Image (cartoon, rainbow, N blue to C red; front, side, top):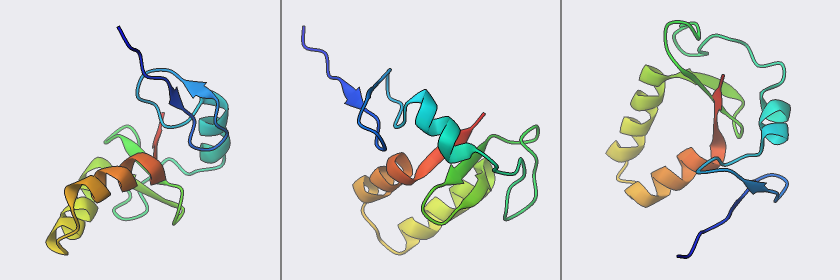
Length: 93
């Protein structure tokens, strides 16, 4: 059986499962981030939040879905959207 090893997108260390960042880099990226969506103001208790590391914005689940729908309406291929979501977005816990 062949097991693929995934690496942190920031530091290159091996990460568990399908995580994009190791625990240290995730903590570093999310330090000082507010606990509300930048678009609609929902708190993390109302909806799961995600931080965009490229544009430094916090999205709730609904606003992220609207963002993805906008990308699809511009006819961006799904594989590019998936790559963007994996590389640029970090869940806030």
